[in-house]
Amino acid sequence: MRVHRENPARPRELVGSVPITPPEAVEVIAREADRRFREWSRAPLSARLEPLRAAADRMDADVGELGELLARETGKPVVDCRGEISFAAVYLRWLCDRAETVFAPTEIDDRLGRLTVTPRPYGVVAAITPWNAPIILSILKLGPALAAGNTVLLKPSPLAPLTVTRVAQLLPESTVVHGGPELVQALIADPRVGKIAFTGGDAAGRAIAAAAGQALKPLVLELGGNDPAVFLDDFALTPDDYERLVLASFATSGQVCMAAKRLYVPRRRGEEFLDAYLAAAQRILRVGDPLDEAVTMGPVVSRAAADRVTALISDAAARGGRIITLADSPEREGYFVDPILACGLADDAPLVSTEQFGPAVPLLTYCDEAEVLSRANDSDLGLGASVWSADEDRAFAFAAQLEAGFTFINTHNRTGMSLHAPFGGMKRSGYGREYAEDGLREYIQTTVTHSPAAFRPGGPGLPARAYPAATGI
Image (cartoon, rainbow, N blue to C red; front, side):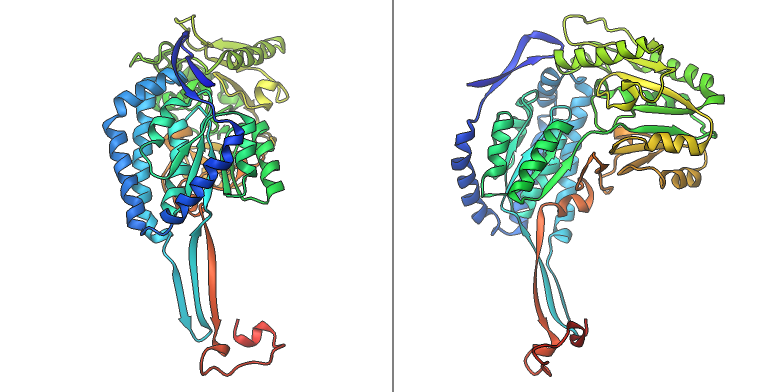
């Protein structure tokens, strides 16, 4: 059997297909990955990094072809797709430059004794990735895991299996498997799998965490977000800033975990903000065929996604919300949803209280900072947030009170990312970190060898029942 992938912009067009991996095949696949791990982990670090650098070079060389394939299977604008692939290559090179420092053993030899701390890989890592940014979200797992000496079983989303498979083939000791929840459960249950890394939705995250807990296996878990963007009363945005803000919500048709999903503006500046925002949306949003270089927003990924977002918009209108269409979709064959801004909603409206994951964003007003802080934090998700202010110190002070794993200042979404900034969530948005050195360390476990000074050759020795403090700890 095979997974067939349609083009969300033209659903009658088959982009490609991949073979389904039966869950019962996992035992053989994992056993082979474990065998290769024994060899790969013993290779010098430099030998493990060399093919990662080569893969980055190949991704850059093939970025045009890979970008078009990614646009056709996901519905993301081709310019964004090429950018994602290029950024993944940049990340691989950054990782290679930092790996020797992060993965180096440390040794202390002093009056307290001799101590070595040695990083070791987990063995076989199961990586489960989503469709919305499949290349970078796969590379964020593949790169560190392979550099650390693990082998990887990668399971992409059935909604974006094609480009990921092509890219993963450039990397050594990674095996791509395709399937659904039953395959994921088989990966987690296999005794040779030592760690699981997952990015995706809440329901799948709960099932994966439960299975990993039953098997006592560690997780990196990055789930969704309902990110507030808070504009303090002194915000000062240029037209370019407003355009960046619009794309912070509507890039990838809003289907981004860290998109700006709730906009909070001081009531006295609400009309001013709305006028400038609508003007920016008119300038920057171009909805249409993702292969058109001028398009900035394509379709959503599936008919189910389009129906879900349309239902949220209909509910918002039924609750008395003012629905403002920001751009029209000239393409009607595919899964296009007109991007909208919703004004006048209460905080309990589903479009506000749940992650929309689509091109529909509420604009909310507030009276004072205490009120907006409470409302911004009133969510069981805590992935990202942003604070906008002319006073950077004031913005940082407010950000320190937000319940978010990553808070942007005067920007939001991908324009605020940094390779050296750890990324991950709080509350129900998951745990563990990607990017930065923290993201590399997720794929190693430390082992310790310790010779206390008292028991080294020639040491004074201690009574058998001596408390550890007697050794100088």
